Length: 332
Image 1 (cartoon, one colour):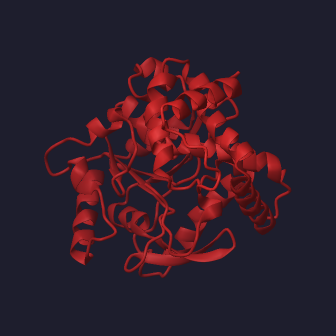
Image 2: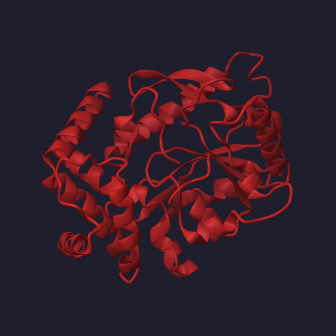
């Protein structure tokens, strides 16, 4: 049913000039997909949310089936990762599911716009909420450590829906719901807008953002930050990820060490029914002398090993990881 509906909506969008038919067009980064999502989402929101999610995935699977170069690119990437991680994946099946989930991933949380809390929260299966509440109970704020695996912006959306005091520490995310964007509009020293960071910033900007993030934690709030951000310059360490050595930001480690705030890893893979399996793991603490003891790199590697394990278990939720190239940065 979802596949037929995806085809019907694709035909409608093509008739309106939103979707082209040129099979030579590269998939990733095309403005045409953004236009398609913006046109399709208002239509899809009339459906039950799980059905709408399946339709979005259906778009991606349909594109995968019809676009031979795209299909080959996915199968090459998935096959290479299966060998690197020593996994016996069904390359064709994983590639097809990944193509579908990737489109849902790129829609971020926009599908939940305009929905009541009850309807939106029904899309989540939540485990480990007690770990989050216990961490906040320590009175030092807490760091919710995310990654670009699975539905990576959905944990933040859930935190907002549940009225947790949360701030995002990352580049300003693009293509998000109006519901979340409205939460970015606030004033004062802990305003969200002042916590967004930029790759173009200098060392002074970086120091200022660290101080503001520390104030957030001292105010007993949740700091939502990714631990798999490839970065250059200061506050970075190299680590192995998917068989390659890369350089990653260590900001989350330094913040945890400076503040004493507990850290919780959160994962949110997209389930087979296109709902979100949100899980908060038990909290841990980073030693205050982590820099002096030279252990920062070990903490980076520890987290990336968790992400790799998630990819082994849920390869169709690996998003852009398998396509990472040297010098290319993931989208926020």
